[in-house]
Image (cartoon, rainbow, N blue to C red; front, side, top):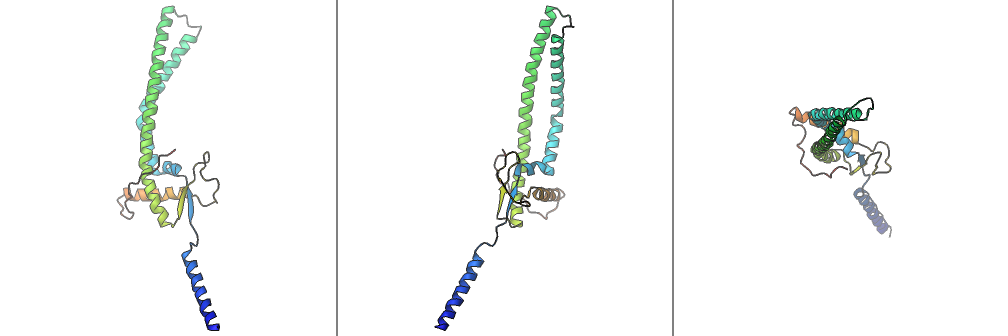
Length: 198
């Protein structure tokens, strides 16, 4: 009987050890603000800076045109200006024409700059998303969850220290600068589709 009890005790001990070994000890979970991380990367800032410089001449033209419109409005509304009916009609037509031109050019500027900014964002986001997969595996994270922004949170509460946005950006910048200088220490990142940013 004692021998049988010892066998059962040994069997139960082995079973307990096996179950403990198979059950997950602790899950490492982190949060990240992905869109903010993309915009904080050196690569995105460089791309956005280049876009700003490229669109600067068009922005200056819009500013000049806007000033012309404002000047015409002031001339027409200023009672000190003694204008004939013909001059008023001429300037009114000029104002209407310039207002339409300003509206059309402003819409084109917004559409073009938004489109190119979005394309630049997506190029960097594609790379950062692929890098995040590698980074998470290297740091043994079980899951990395989108935190959202302070204005529109996705996660309502997370303990301090769980957010890895800054660390991810620093690591990405480090590997990007290494890759651009010809370093082969980091693996090439696959092109992985990512969700469209909100």
